[in-house]
Image 1 (cartoon, rainbow, N blue to C red):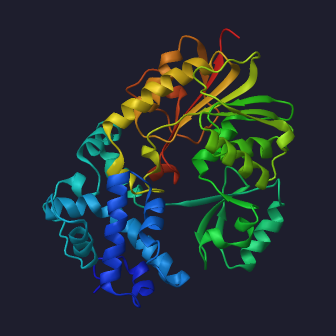
Image 2: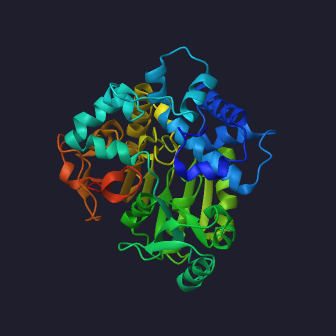
Image 3: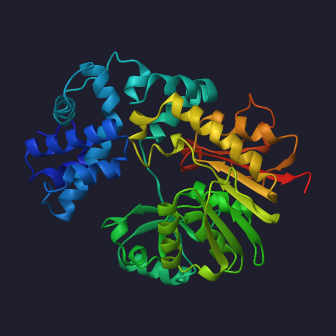
Length: 401
């Protein structure tokens, strides 16, 4: 009955009808394809008023939905275009998909242009890279603004969580196994443990915020990196946190308060950082730019479906405007994107190469793509090499300020 579903989810689905599972999976697919939302949002919409399930069953169904969306392009390649969403879901659930003879891009469940682009960038590594995009590694950082590392580790041990302390950042943990959904752990509910990818942490570590620094965060919402700036500076750095969205800024401020950030040191500004007028030069500037999120496929497999070349081009243009502004605002600038695409990384950074001096503080990171100028000064984090989301990081010091 469940031959197409990974064994890890089968036990949780035994009490559910195949009809219900197919219905939910097809609804999730409908929402991802038509509304371009994440799998998390699509699953909540699909389950609304329908999923009267135990926690165990709901988690199993959610994980099955993630796996189905990750495999959707492969299923579509096998069955052909023009089928109903339920037909794709049913074929996947029943194991009626044979990948033999399919093109390699189909077998990895990605669009052809994405496969060919990555192949041109990483060559023979592309298979390992694409495999890693289907396997999420869960990272969480201890929030020392709320609790000590020892307290959080003791709590995790009491709740039966298996974890590994990261060798680069001792407050960062790789979650290996948890007896319950990580979001339901007491330390997570109390904001003492924060789900944050290692690559995201590395961006702020590269910025190296210190007590007394005045920092500009040019695209701060939802606030995870801003809160880490506060944590690493012992709540003694001052941060001007800018975001273009009033709603996201409001939610970001609320989150910062929950995470123990001293809000008297944070000034939230709703504005477009491309055009913002500021009277001072900042000690440090963080530009974690809006992007295609092509590096976050393991977190949201729906990106395999919704990611397009036009989206990459759109964000690349925005990023070039932002980075041009950033180097006029601070002595030190860290630019980052959660993207595997050079159009959002190397190409953007090189537009300001004559105005800055690049430097490379993260020694464990890979270099940028070698076909690009200054690649040895850039930092890339890859899921198949570093067990992180795919990130580009560039550190710069202004020549003129």
